[in-house]
Length: 312
Image 1: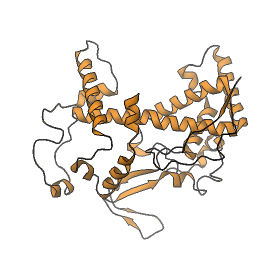
Image 2: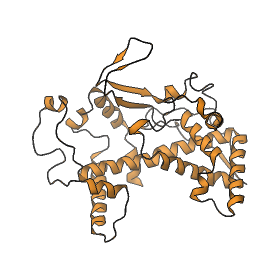
Image 3: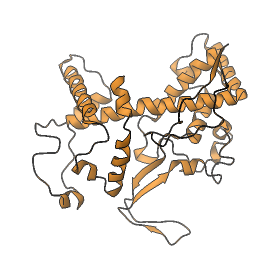
Image 4: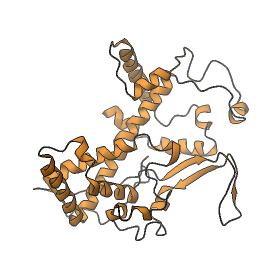
């Protein structure tokens, strides 16, 4: 867990990394600059290779994401950067003709990314959700009543299938993701010329775009009263009013976050467990509004979030 926190605690490195990446996506790689410290990279690489070795030696290999990567992995003995020398001009120039190879080091990088995406963002969203529930007891009561209804119907504890039936809870989670997206922007590259409707602007192929998630989610054109926490925006009655492309907590299209459904279920499960047994309340230390910490890699509250828990 200590190493997991170090994977997330990138500090000043994130500013330097994203500045270099803004100049050119390959520049950090060419300069040998990593988002994470060399110690963390070395640990994650070693850990992943050990897990891969054990999976290879196992007589009953499990079918999971790591196994899928291993099946596609073409192991290379040379360094991750390759044995040949390529000039800076070549690296920044024309499109690469060679096929991409998945190496053990690449798998280690993917593993670290999954670890990052599975810890900090979910923690932030759950914290923000609890904060809003403490300020909106009527919403909290609706969640509790929905949980009780499902429990009475199933006659036992909430199962995975029951969790999917908690529609209002899902609305609450989605509204939390709207108001508090952990990714401030989405980075994409234009693959073909695109003329923006009702304008003279043409986005040429190769242009890099930064789409403001916060800007879209707080735009009254798409979400009336954007500062209001209103889970009913995502009800079956109102969901059709949300303009496609205006709600992007996990991205959109073929590059949408692969952990989207898993993240939603994890958040719902944590909120359900706490609301089932406790009532969330504000206290004298609770902030009037959550302020974003500009030094964090993921957008999240600055400082500690204080709430009171009361046993039901």
